[in-house]
Amino acid sequence: MSTQFRSLMAAFPTGVAVVTAFDLDDTPWGMTVSSLSSVSLDPPTLLVCLRDTSPTLDAVVRNGSFTVNLLHHEARAAAELFSSGDPDRFRQVAWARPESVGGPHLVDAAHAAADCEVDHMHRTGTHVVVFGRVARVVHRSASQPLLYGLRQYASWPQIA
Ligand SMILES: Cc1cc2nc3c(=O)[nH]c(=O)nc-3n(C[C@H](O)[C@H](O)[C@H](O)COP(=O)(O)O)c2cc1C
Image 1 (cartoon, rainbow, N blue to C red):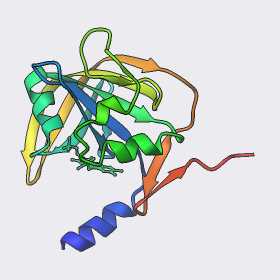
Image 2: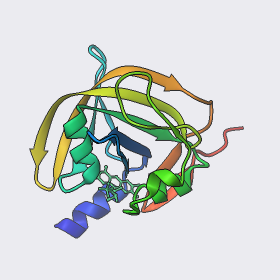
Image 3: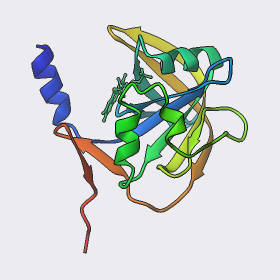
């Protein structure tokens, strides 16, 4: 069933985001996700599903806030870096601190970002669903989003 389930979800294309958070000692953490979903308009709420052994999840839990960075179509290298397990991820990208709550903003790789406060969490199997109350949204550029589906990255097709 695991293989069939992976194939099923591979056939459901999504955008690509990097969830970031600061640990209590100010260490930045971040991981590539495709599990982002809108939950509620009022109050504005989103969710991400994070592997329960992830150090990024630990930082989100400890800090109580995180940022969802939406990657643009030229940021495939950032998507690969933040899914690589590389311990030096943040030395290899440009990032900035959020205005108040949240994690690092990937200023070159993301076309938009949402700073969130953790509303609540729900553990299911291997993952923890984190519900985030959106405190601030930043639009950095009008770039097209990076897409992921059928186990590969893609760009939005040009519409004439
Ligand atoms: C396109 C893409 C989407 C991913 N989406 C998720 C996701 O939604 N949740 C998750 O836990 N891991 C996801 N992963 C895997 C993590 O990015 C990967 O395990 C990463 O190393 C986790 O970072 P960590 O070492 O800080 O835990 C995804 C990977 C890729 C390439």
